[in-house]
Amino acid sequence: MSRLSTAIRRTATRIFASLLCIAPSLANASTSTTFPDAAASDPATLGWMVGSPPPADRTVRFEDGSYFQFPAMRWSVSNFRQLMPTINVSRGLGAPVPLATALRKDIDAISFIPIGTKTAMTWEQSLAATYTDGIVVMHRGQIVYERYFGVLKPDGQHAAMSVTKSVIGTLGAMLVAQGQIDAGKQVSDYVPELASSAFGNVTVRQVLDMTTGLQYSEDYADPNAEVWAHAKAGSPLPKPKDYSGPRNYYEFLQTVKPQGEHGKVFAYKTVNTDVLGWIISRATGRNVAQLLSEKIWSRLGAEQDAYFTVDSIGTPFAGGGLNTGLRDLARFGEMLRNDGRFNGQQIVPKALLHDIRHGGDKQAFAQAGYELLKGWSYRSMWWVSDKEGGAFMARGVHGQRIYVDPRAEMVIVRYASHPVAGNSANDPVTLPAFDALAHYLNSKEIQ
Image (cartoon, rainbow, N blue to C red; front, side, top):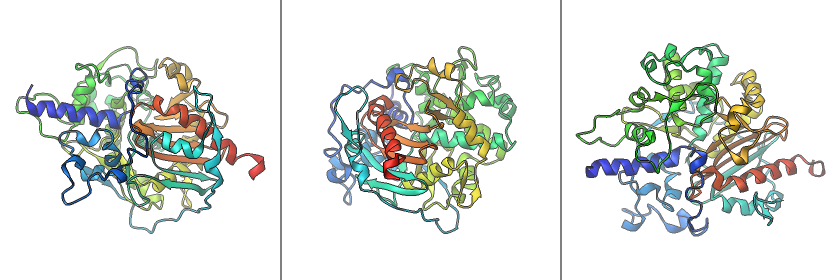
């Protein structure tokens, strides 16, 4: 294997391990490793990329994959645009719409018991435990909590990782609700190039709910796993001269083979969102970055542009490439909590949100083996809880979250840089912490 090919593989490993949601079988792969805590790994304290030029031992690079080695990755997730090619998501030309703010100091003292332990933890302690870079909590339309750590600032942007999937899922479901895409049609009706692939006879709904039968493994320990071909195709780095495989996301998707029966089992696979992005582009004539700006971002009164990382031909990475400001992500979440209405206008159809909150096929989801999410389901690329009121969540590796709880009238958005990618590393803290906050904010004694 050539040095260039090895470099591409190593870099692709870190790109995909960082931007994708790891399957249950991989979620605990690194949990036994001891990492420096949040304070010791603070990227501002360690001084990554400070200086002209930075010292050699505090320099991170995209080309060799060093940018995603812990603890350097705690700097990188807030600075992807400095390291790799991107495409903009315009906020439009209007003035930002301020978010009402009524900060509460009492939230830090909220106490809960993390899953699997008997020792109480406070909300404030949970932030360090999950390596939080920034968090915003909205309750009844007001920001009641907002904190930033490390190098993420209110005017900065952070990688959303697989939270991206839920944003793209929202776009796709929006087009279905508006009649621009027929969820019952096959993928090949919109993208004929995929007719001979595993996606040829898959319906759009099966893609949205990830109940597709695909020969696609995201097992990074297996050198023959399909994720490697996906990674090589999507990498914007130059390919080796002897490389003959797919050279972008579009070309890779045409190589995916079928495995199993469509529509029976939930199987979280990033390529589904890449396919949805292609369908959206074909149906509208715009790529997902352009459409997200037109349909949602420019209508939120956002403070900042967002952006996507891209492959070598500029294709936005629909499966995990979105980067946004934290407050703007809160605007997006609050819009969803309000049944798609925000900034004085109906941005997303109300029926779409009711469909998501109702959830997907619980039996299909249960077969995927998410031990901490028993009773949950998956609908239009959102993780839907079993809680009364239909709380739902967007989840990304290393701790990225949008949590919408309509019954508690609460939205939580969090950006983080947990050293372990898999969600099982932070879910034992995150899930009870979010539940405790919802209960506290909605309890009678503080109304």
